Length: 154
Image 1: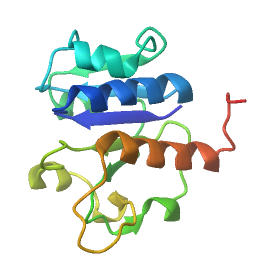
Image 2 (image 1 turned 180 degrees about the vertical axis):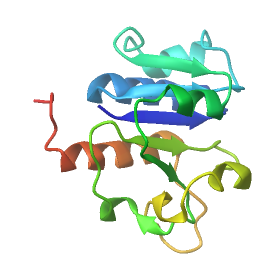
Image 3 (image 1 turned 60 degrees about the horizontal axis):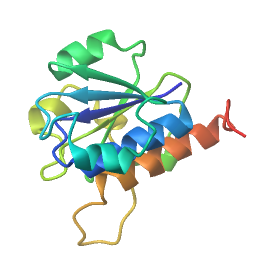
Image 4 (image 1 turned 90 degrees about the vertical axis):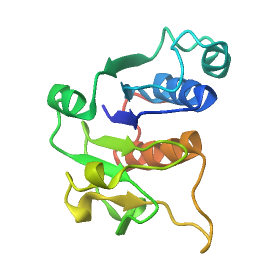
């Protein structure tokens, strides 16, 4: 239904939480290398609990390879400087959401590949840097799923 793309994730528990999120929403998770951990990492497995077998996860050598394999043309980078709030877009099945590294977000050369009006942001109190990656992913994914009236959910 939806795709979550993590660009070079660094912190295993965040990815583990997102694996659990994807298992519970039907989203596909795409991990763009290099990863800051091994997929066998104990922290990753602990955070994902027993959801690893329920989630669809793909690894990609780089972002170009990932985007070529997606079955969508609509990719929404999520960045603190995005021009539009995540709630102001209308999403459709198959859309993808691209999240950057926990410590530095998406590099400028990645953001430049997307139209500025596709870069979305989550509202925050001024002066704060960012939300936790797994929290941000959950907020965006649930808003998109809500807009479609939670197909496949109970």
